Length: 267
Image 1 (cartoon, helix red, strand yellow):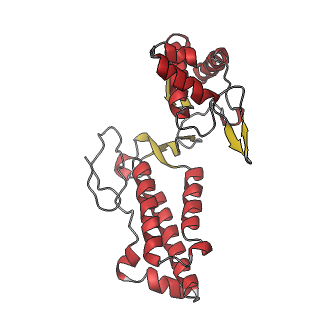
Image 2 (tube, rainbow, N blue to C red):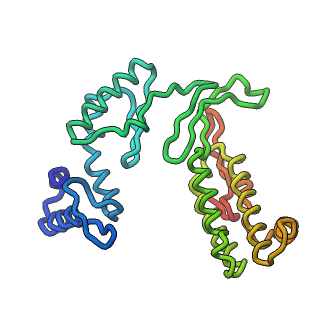
């Protein structure tokens, strides 16, 4: 790691600081544990150091790799035209990482064929699938679609459930709605690029259902009362609507402008 940093940095004070960060331990159950290798888990500088170290993979791939390498921190895809090329790319990837003292996580490593009706691939929270256009006019067009993955949807439901949990019943409803809106805006801001309209509706409806249940419990009433107090009232207590916030691409056409969640414009 230090050798990779020293390729571009010669400031001794900065290098001394990096060494101190690498030697910093991790607090576990009141005791500090010092790892022999790697950076401290959860350290603020760890993502940056990850990119510095894996930049060597990017450089070597230009001459020894097969296909197109797409990497974000330690998540990566290799795009190939044939299965033979994909298998060769996997062999090259294992070899290059071994030279860097790294190895692939086997349960997340696989070769996937992106074809119509086939399985998709999860990358950076999105599920990518090769699909055919639904419109009868454009049924001859196939394209790569993307939407929130199953794991991303489950994480959204888990967070919404936590924000409307029983332990928060003493909080004002307005404060709970503000927390929900803050989370939904951030979630929608990340996943707005793609074919995610149906998934946005599912997440928003789940938030509405949880808010109605929260109101019912707070007033010690039935779920139907909660729905009447939230879902059937104008504005629904201020819970934001995610409809129209998806910026969906069209096959062979540039991205089109759409308003963000919460009604704000985008440039």
